[in-house]
Image 1 (tube, rainbow over the protein chains, first blue to last red):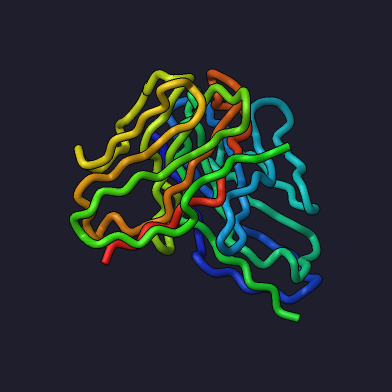
Image 2 (spheres, rainbow over the protein chains, first blue to last red):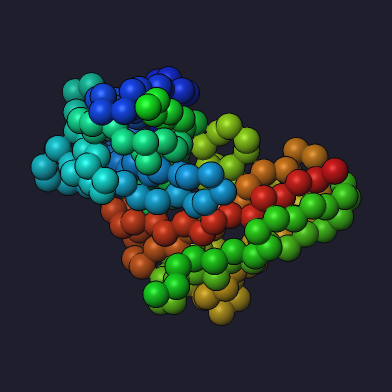
Length: 112
Length: 116
């Protein structure tokens, strides 16, 4: 069985500040991990993913995430927040077949 | 190229009515997934197709929910005798690979179902 916990349902940062969105997972097999972004009334868009290899993964829009097996974490970061980053972010873990288990999401607010 | 499309985008149904939600995946995508997203929550898996075969329907909440993909392309999620707890956004996603675990899923915009 797989599960995902996103710590903090709401995160607020100032424009230009560091963004840190937390994700912890549990998986009985080596995980495939994903971060998605969802804008209002839109579907989910992939930001980045970890499958194998390098544990620091870079994605679109300046986001990156680091897979830490010992901590069962896959936290999402961005050095400098932009107003356009305001959205809801979902962490997910996949089975081999692609069935995704999602966290409950974190709403990011960016203050001017 | 066209992404995943879903129709209708919004559906209001009276309790007890049947509804059908359509998903047009990206052409050539083998895998197709349906998710249910309740307000303020993450998407929850409903069912998975590989071509026309429904390989996993473990997430369907009751026997009122039925999904099909008869020709391995378009899929329909049908909900019979809708209840208020069925109100949610229904997301469809498709993926190029048969074993889609490491592959990106492309999501449609969803159908927002409101049962009154």
